[in-house]
Amino acid sequence: MIGLQLLIVLMIALGVIVGSVDILSVTLAQLQQQPAMASLVLSAYAVGSCAMGLVFGGLTFNTPLSRLLFLSGLMTFLSIVPMWWVVGVYSLSVVVFISGLFFAPTMIIAMTLVERIVPRNKLTEGMTWLLAGLNIGVAIGAMLTGKMVDTYGPYAGYAVAISGGVLVFISTWLSYLRDKTQQKMAVECEEYH
Image 1 (cartoon, one colour):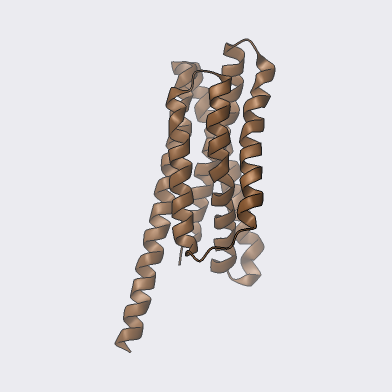
Image 2 (cartoon, rainbow, N blue to C red):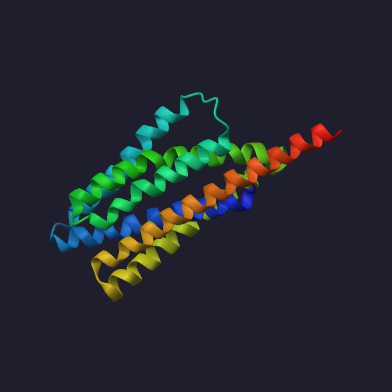
């Protein structure tokens, strides 16, 4: 069974990406002397996430949740890597729209897993931990991106978002490995008895 701690790390990592995008959108819009265009980036991220959340929430899968979590984490990471090539608000909008398509499924799967791994009388607390992780990640991502932009220039902040993507991938991969190992041990125990 996937552990709550890894899901909290996942949510922190997702938050780092969101916080970074918040700062980068404003930074790039100011660089292009179009501060109102920052809202385009944030809207693209929200629309991508919302659209896929609506679609994904209505789908039924036969795939184990741990595998779905890993795949959505991998796609979240891969979709954020193109930030290295972003040169302005419009290209950032495209990247975050695509990234948003994977953000919602990753979060939905994480919340579904919490429902399965936390005792019923602790469900609210379990979900609160995930949401707290997301909020902590947003604060960390915004702070680190702001520091990188102020210290090394406007494009240095991309490293923070991509690092968040790496952490998303690692946390979902470890969750998947943990779940597979525990399933294998359960089968071996049944065969032994």
